[in-house]
Length: 102
Image (tube, rainbow, N blue to C red):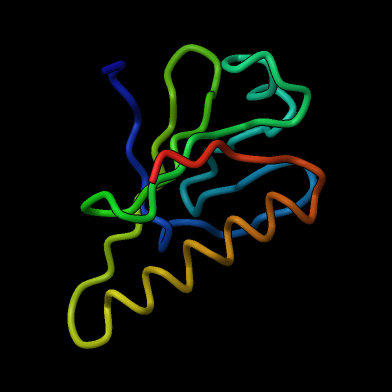
């Protein structure tokens, strides 16, 4: 598998129509992820809800960026799934898609 940058969902500062901004200032620009894989006009990432931990792998140029859902503790599984769905809904809301691996 390709080496990827790994970021936790909890490091996300903002998600908007352009992409994802992390607290560190790093960004994922959705339009740069399109057509990197699957030759799709809208697909920006692969996702797997049932992986441990669940993740989205964005097709960022140079090196893919993996956003993982790794909250720990009580109710962490349901909180991670809620966050996962939230990110999936945001991607769709802004006109993009992700490929389901689960």
